[in-house]
Length: 493
Ligand code: BES
Ligand code: MG
Ligand code: ZN
Image 1: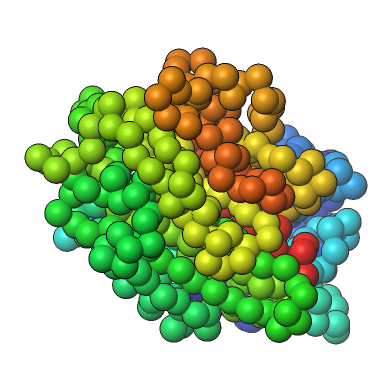
Image 2: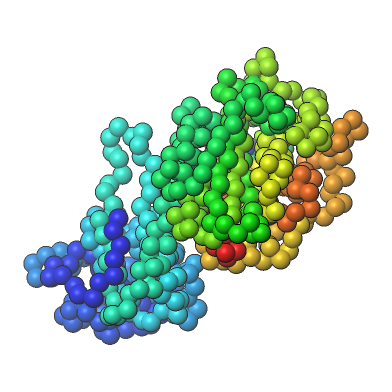
């Protein structure tokens, strides 16, 4: 979809979206032919439509013998508008426009927005492109209908520089998110650890970051045994994927590690899941997709940061050689782990990936992002991701990023008392902490590997997938984390 800013309307209109503040009047919207505005105004009064926040109304009219689709969308109190509110307004309006088969959309603001031009352009483009995403490549027929070709933002201004910069940035955020969505939506029979590594290589080539992959033999040599144990039950070999972007060549600048959980499938292993619990487990590489997507956006914007992204990609399956409950594995760090439950596999892969990031890539700070626990879903449902941290200052930065991107996060306590729950009698720790506080004990397990470096832990088990489209999210993978991580890194330039 093309997105541009124009000052002149063409002769024939296809679809108009009029945004207006609550109780605002239609008549003062510039550029729209007065005649048309009068008819819309009359229609609106008849329908008692008052533009309360996120209310929509759509209808068509015949203007000069041609059908024009009209979509009215309410902004509510314009002074209370935020980027998040704009995003959901744009999402509703553009969804509606495409259901009306719009090809050319003209969007008119009926008021001066309090959101600055860069942010406005950003959310406009981002929402449009996020809404346009569909995973329909496996449908032989009945693919979802064509999306609008162009979204024209009609504005009486000569200076479109900031708006256009925002549009460009919003496009980068959305495209990177859509790439992550695609990786997650691909089923596990296609998106194997190898396929994930290949997809990351293609992304690296396209967006301009470095990539290296490490195969099983070498992983054995560097003793990533916690990670390797998880992958042992699968015929698909594990792969460590390392991506680098050095946007700030100053050596003194710190290295930020983004570590994403990359289980291309999680059957639970010998602690096997129920069919219901297993059916969506192709999404267990949602964290990996988030860091790959973020690398694309970061490299594309050439942010002045040094980032390394690490994905320990593997599949949790069952075989004669799979790891078992009761095994004791030695992680790369040397810490030993008693495996109580083979379904708590994510933390075993992540602890080695985190250790690798610090020891081999000299990471100074770590963000890990993972579809880690059912407990995170039980705690916060589908609306908020769980976060834990050992650094409140850095968390504040993540909160600001989340406020901008609309990817909600909520902190759970990383209190030392919970550590009791993962103590083992026969190893340095065990991989589950029992039924209570599961999202916290999983996080605290990982904190043992960050060597007191600033650390943010994001559990996206509840937010990575949607059973129903809503806002900018389609059915299926949301691509959560791509925009959040990109925004966080942007604030660290
Ligand atoms: N990948 C799952 C977590 C998950 C659950 C993600 C639901 C998305 C939706 C993880 O590997 C897992 O199985 N966790 C277990 C841990 C338990 C055995 C301590 C869980 O949450 O049940
Ligand atoms: Mg599991
Ligand atoms: Zn898992």
